[in-house]
Image 1 (tube, helix red, strand yellow):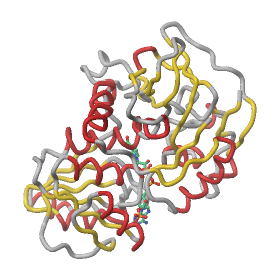
Image 2 (cartoon, rainbow, N blue to C red):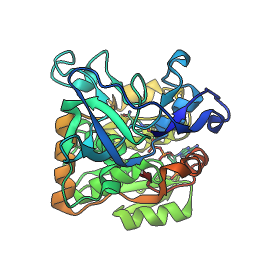
Image 3 (spheres, rainbow, N blue to C red):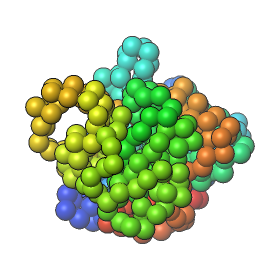
Image 4 (cartoon, helix red, strand yellow):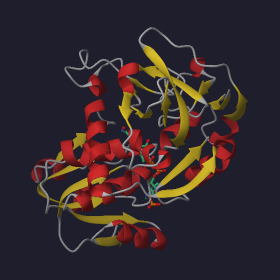
Length: 322
Ligand SMILES: NC(=O)c1ccc[n+]([C@@H]2O[C@H](COP(=O)([O-])OP(=O)(O)OC[C@H]3O[C@@H](n4cnc5c(N)ncnc54)[C@H](OP(=O)(O)O)[C@@H]3O)[C@@H](O)[C@H]2O)c1
């Protein structure tokens, strides 16, 4: 079958390790099943893998891709939950299973004609979502859903700041937050992306690092080092940063004085449970909110999508179709 594979690690030029071509059909362990992939979406995770972050070199070659929407063995339209974990080992939450992985970390991923997944990882795709839209949900949109509605500890009407408005997670945060009645403020390095964030439902937009009109209740961080200081400064006393990514670097100054003096909270967040994915799909079905798709490409042209993401040249999700 056709697949997009990480064959080598190159921290500086991640696209060097990308290979497109024939791979063996998936092997299907007991309790697992296969999905014929109709659409899949690119995440920064795929670029990190090519850079050697979060993967062991001895696991290569591995098929990339965390996200998929497709057809199961019984002909049902499904979304694939990407977290391979045992809820029992995680105290009822598979993302907290110490042995959990995402597709494309230990097991082959979704950038292929077919992907093998545990049966419990299939979620019905609402008929109102296209395969391309549904393919955006399992990683970026699920992460945003959990950050906002599980981890942020704010109520509708609160003000939240989304750093790096153009990203896949960030566009999901803006659209979901606006639909849920939050006042969403967003930052971006690009004027075009700031305008697009307003179209998505942001209430106000700012240049990266700009002083805000007032302090916010919570900050949604995926950028990391480049925006961390601004995130800390932008919080009201008692406010909370929810962090799920560090695209620009993971070692900003901690500014501990600010954290304790203003009684700030820093909360980590990763992916979401299968139940949260079900609720996210229902939220989109009920509200009409849809993922912002930057571009849709045939999987054979995946290299173009990877290049755009590595350059930061996108607004929303890059979707690959079969
Ligand atoms: N923990 C999890 O479960 C989870 C899930 C999904 C993603 N993530 C992580 O979250 C991050 C975002 O993922 P994604 O898929 O949304 O990536 P993405 O679509 O590539 O978005 C990255 C965004 O970060 C901003 N950015 C990058 N470098 C910057 C810099 N130097 N200064 C300011 N802004 C910068 C950009 O925003 P502007 O161009 O608008 O400024 C860019 O659009 C990644 O690090 C990813 O690994 C984690």
